Amino acid sequence: MNMIEPDNAEGLPPSAALATREASVGMTMPVDEVVAGYGHGQTSERVDQIADALSKAQGEFNNPKKGSLNPHFKSRYADLADGLNSVRAALSNNGIAIVQSTYMDGCLMLRTQLIHSSGQWVASEYPVIQFPAKPQEIGSAMTYARRYSLFPMVGIAGDDDDGNAATGTIEDQSRHELISSEQVAELHDLIGKIGKPDAEKNFMVYFKIENLGDLPARDFGRAVAAIKAKAPRS
Image (cartoon, rainbow, N blue to C red):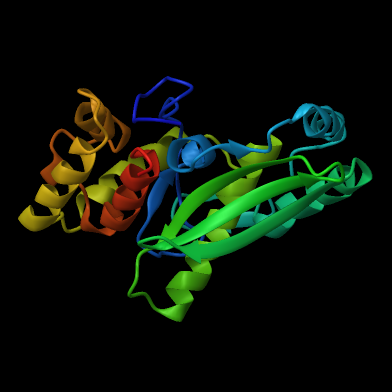
C-alpha cells in the first residue's frame, strides 16, 4: 500500500459505521476500516492455496452471536471470544491458523496473520495504543484491536449498524481535547513525507475533520501510526 487515498485499493477504504471500544480507552474507530485502513496489507509471495482454503472456510462460517451489550448505545455486539468461536473450527479444518502478536513502532502495534499449512499467509497490522498507558487501558485496547483486526480478515460481522451509535460517537469525539499546535505541525510534516498532493486532504476526510487542528488528542497516536504505515519505506 502507498498513500492515503479513500475509496482506493491502495489507500484508505470507504467510511463505515463507527463503533466504540468495549471499554473506554480513548479510541474511536470505523468498524471495517481497521485492516485496510491502518495496516500494511501483507502476503506471502503466493496466496493461491490459502485463498482457496479461506474461501472454503468462509463457506462454513456463520456470523457470531451478539452476546455482549454496549451500554452507551444500548446495542449488542459479538466480542472477541464470540468471533473466535465462530471461525476457529472451520479455519482449522481447512489448515489455517490465526496468529496475533505485538511489537513496538512508535506505539504498540498488533500483527494479525492467517497462516496456511502450505506456508502461505496473509497479514495485517494495526496500531493498538500510544504509551504511556495504564495496564487496564492496554488490555482493553488489545482486545479491541484483536477483534477489529480479525473480523474483517475472515469476513464476519459482529456489530449492529446503528445510525444512532454513529451519531453518538461523533458527538462524543467533539467533547474531547484537541491536539496541540506542536502536534498539528508534526502531523503536517509526517503527511508531507507521504509525497502525494491529496494526502493531507484525504487524511482529514478519513478522520472526519475539517482541519488538522480538529483532531481529538486521544486520536493523535493512532494518526501518527497510520501515517507512518503509509509512508514510503526508507
